[in-house]
Amino acid sequence: YIQTGVTARSHSAAELVSPRAHAPALLMPHRTASVGAESPLEGLIEEGARQSVVGGKVLLRVRLACDEVAALTEPAPVFLLAPRLAYLPCFFTDLHEHFKPYLASLKGESHEVWFDFNGTPIKWHYPVGVLCDVLFGTEVPSPVDLTLHFRGCPSSKELIPFTGIADFKNAVLSACRQAVFLQQGDAKAWMRLPMQQQQKLWDAIKSTDIATTAELQKQLLCPTLGKCKSFAVRVHLSGLTEQHAVLLHPAAALHESLPDKGGAGKRPATVLDFLRQALPPLLDQGAERLAAGVEVLTQGVHLPLDTPLYWLALNAAYLDHFVHLVVRTPSKDSAFSPLAR
Image (cartoon, rainbow, N blue to C red; front, side, top):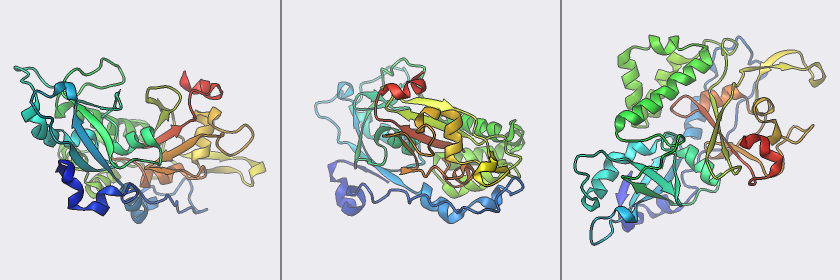
């Protein structure tokens, strides 16, 4: 959905104005005591839950940077009803066509396309839903105001340059390969995927075709939970620094049960198990709860700490095959200083 100008609401006022109209459904994992190491991963997918969780949308209002307007009048903004799974580059072609008459000639030079929110550059290589979780948590404004630039991209190792669709494709497919490697322990499953299927996957991601992406990604799953080396989980830290920090940490599929907890052997690992290993300062010492003021969310909703990681990986992952957990903390609190290193 794309609409230019301030009259976008006339197309569907209720749809565009309500910030909750396109929020994802609450995560309700189907927990079962029978899930174990021999459980086939594909059999643990809950299609109805997945469609509910990943179907959220966000209303964006995109304006051209005022210092790049080479015309007597400013162009009207563009309204985008963007799927949370989509990437900002998915809209670059339409945005360029709209703003092109107002841009100065580059005289053969390529564009350096980037976005900012309130002056802070946005990491375009992460999905829209992840960016909204980082910036706003569960209280996403409607619309989200972004500024589009076609030159002067900040020099930063955190902001990948974008000069064309090839940069977008490389970033997303590299993430897909990395996700397969983390889960399988090697990239053989990805390498066995025919080039025609890889192209089909890329086309599906580019168009936010959830059904086709899900079907193709089934070919990249481990056969059972016990065969899974690690789930692909990326943690995005917000509030500790002014920058959007990202952490990649192994996320074991199974966790050793303790006898004093009512069992022995291995059980499916949960979000709590993962946070204990990856980010222990987020938890109250000696308690199975988050420290005061800490939020953990994905797909726009807060996560219960007993949510199994396999459930998130199968039903709440983004199109790059990653679970993107967003951790929001009160601010630069010294109690969380280990996370800022």
